[in-house]
Image (cartoon, rainbow, N blue to C red; front, side, top):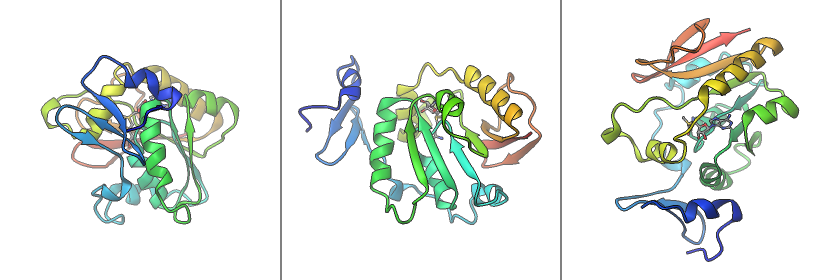
Length: 217
Ligand SMILES: C[S@@+](CC[C@H](N)C(=O)[O-])C[C@H]1O[C@@H](n2cnc3c(N)ncnc32)[C@H](O)[C@@H]1O
């Protein structure tokens, strides 16, 4: 156990909940009364990368394109994008999620993912200042319909991100991409998609549960 938690994690380590953030000597993990959770990209159970709809969709992007995953969460989608060989910037604003993500990223062989960088903070701030991606990937929180069946991965994200201001982020990203002629890709559920987001130029099926909405300006 870590005796001195990193400064930015301290408020979450003392919050009044059954959930704890612990350090096992090499990394942080989440401990609930019923299970523990760590991020380990090797444990993700992806189908073959070439059969994955992400591959079929993103392969049409030129590899030189810089993709920015503006809501990286615990990094699963980012990991997939980086496996496809894109230059990638992953942004996440929650300190707990970013810590788990960054520790998992640090365990990846850097030679395999030389062009994958992480930024901690609000995507709006980075896009307005020092980064200029070609494609923006936005994965807002979906409404939770089947609470009991939700994976640990999603439960952890939901636990820490209950007050997400996704509509404001959407408004910003839509205007940013339109003004700067960028491509915007938004993950949406197959049923119960946002009614406030503009109609996309194209919809691509990603899985039984989700689609990609594409805006090409
Ligand atoms: C649905 S989760 C994304 C899950 C992610 N695609 C994955 O594979 O783990 C949305 C995440 O976006 C983050 N987020 C929401 N708005 C943000 C913003 N404006 N800037 C940076 N991160 C943001 C939240 O903290 C949350 O972790």
